[in-house]
Length: 335
Image 1 (tube, rainbow, N blue to C red):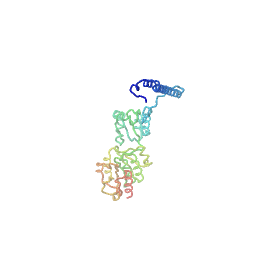
Image 2 (image 1 turned 30 degrees about the vertical axis):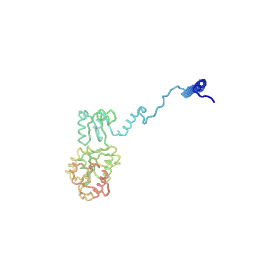
Image 3 (image 1 turned 90 degrees about the horizontal axis):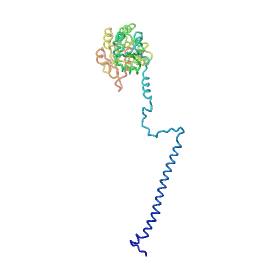
Image 4 (image 1 turned 90 degrees about the vertical axis):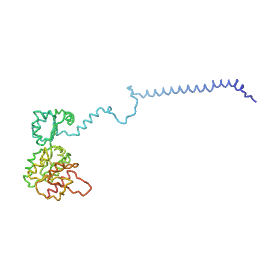
């Protein structure tokens, strides 16, 4: 039996074990680590060679790929702002616009009907334009004094020289001419007056209904109302060519003038105490149609001789302005 004493355990055999261990196990691990290191270097070298072979022949190196942003920046589209500007300008139809001092001056001196004028204070007070603009303003043409920058915004940077105008799609006549025309061949004519209707589609639809029910004319105030633009003419579907229109500076003063000439002023209101079907007065009438949201203004209501309502049987509390005008004209012209 062998003696496993401390001496024997740490003696020659132990030294030989260390020797064998140093020359065997540890050296083997060392060789493996060197082989792994060489393998990794060769793999990296081969990978670089593959990447070099993939480079285009023109030797143009592309930048490393980056994560695409969630949205595309303006730098990728250098003409984006220009395209947006052109898109905005295309939304407005400038076929009925004129700008520039000489062009506008000739239009003011001609016989073309004008819907609206924008000008700077320098143009309005100049000797060349002052008398013309003041005369047009008294005839109902809407004239606005604006800044140079505001006019540039309206014309999208055009060379306006401080003045621009919008032509009307139809000529207008004075209130006196409308009164004389309406009474010429009719004993009890009906006129429509619009109060605060700024939507051109509504104005066009009202004109179409008015002509269809043999209304003799339309009265449009200078402010707080859509003018006779191309949209109005398009929605009116040709009715504007057969209906007289008077554009007045002040609607309430125009109603007083109509009263002096024998007209009864009738307003359409949801709060009216008289149903339109029970209204039996036979006289020249002026029917006032207000906007959908505000209706007839309080000051205009005081000028009315009667406030009429259209009875509604459903849950809807109000009607579109053009629909209310058509219903009222149907009832009033049938009496």
